[in-house]
Length: 210
Ligand code: AMP
Image (cartoon, rainbow, N blue to C red; front, side, top):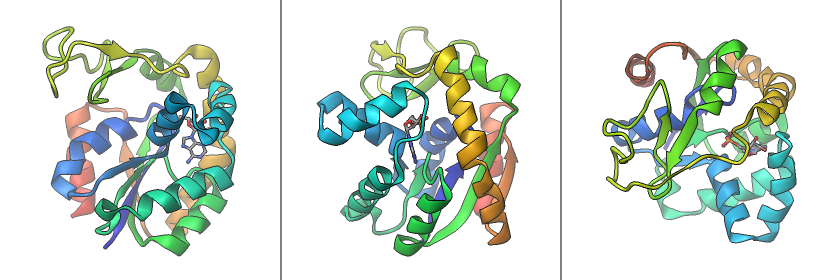
């Protein structure tokens, strides 16, 4: 079956939207960032290599990422297609993807650079279920308790700080944004204004997918 790609700069809301639309689409979220953080957390060889790049706000080498994706797509839950979040981020990654899965829609969530820093610096997640929040724009309904799983422990990502954001944006503009044109020329790019409230963006994405 078809897969979809959520595309956009860091802090555009890809993870937030993936969590919201996974139920309607039935597609599991495949986030290379989450997979890398899990590898870093468990101290695997991939994690150790990736950490150097992630801490510096740079992209992890393509061969590492492509191998992760190949392994992930072998799992049973990926047989009916997946929702990629944060992958592909380079043309070689997109080329590799085109060999192993069929992508029907690339949803580009557009947010101006000026908004990215405040979005990323206020971001935090539930330690238990990974649900994403923002101190100002998207706090839990009851402060201190996760809306999704009712747990009370939260964490911030190590790379969600002002220094790293600048490098992450640079990597996005130099290495990732050319992919928008690449997918546009294939006729599967849907551009969404990501500088609005979360619900409106979700509605637009679901409409684009229908
Ligand atoms: P994310 O959670 O998507 O913001 O990713 C966090 C960090 O993981 C990025 O800044 C990169 O260092 C690394 N990363 C995640 N996905 C990729 C990818 N597809 N290609 C290269 N590096 C990635």
